[in-house]
Image 1 (cartoon, helix red, strand yellow):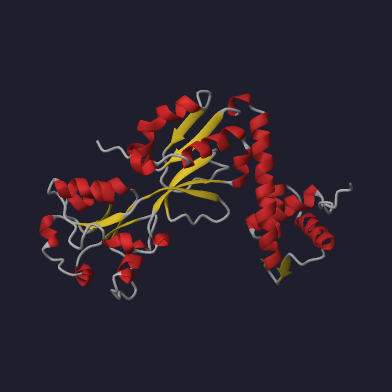
Image 2 (cartoon, helix red, strand yellow):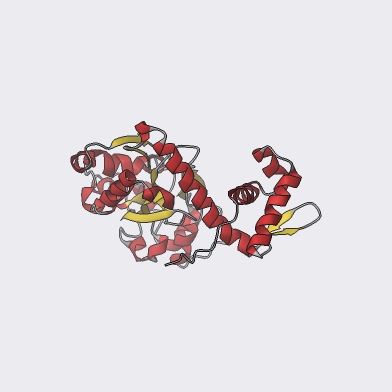
Length: 307
């Protein structure tokens, strides 16, 4: 039976298109590709003629991608990333069983580290390399295969799987709690909020029915441990992970002036969690696919380190 797949455009044209989309202009793309802007323009025109669509609106000094260009970019970018990853792995035998994993510091210390023995028992040949960056890595330049990120599962163009939710509790010291009798009192105190989720407090205040025009937040923290320490010091009202909050409340160090379970009633898409995040093309690597399968099949809620 004959294959009905339409012949692909020349690889050079697709590569030129990819670089133009990344760089935002023919001239910048030409600098990357080490060719003239005219050569880039010719490759784009060839691609447009083959596809019979307009990819860029040419204006006096700029180009603007069309809707079709944005859609095509997702597929072309994924394709080149997959080719690059395949070449990188088959040309370096040291990478064939290696998994370069970036992990949120909180997830690493409270979930993953104490359970690595379980992973080793099912994947004894895996060469696991762990880094700990809070921000989402650039998977290409940072040489990361998989990342475990805190957030809300919204990373465009990447494959995401929820591992465990991280519900928060509004906490403060007993002394500061004297000033918080109702949700509306939150407008009168310093709010501590996570750098990775600028709008989190705003979502919470909206959920509680509190109108705060032009809310900007008060003090931001890059990681959960810093926010917890600041909350314990009495600096302000923090959003503390539930398990940590319960421990601190039981010890009398913090209180939950509005209740421990208050934020559990928020819409699920507004409750943060830890997600397995990676480019879709990386799932084609057998060792990475096996690792991801193991990660997503664990009951991480029950594996939290209580010490």
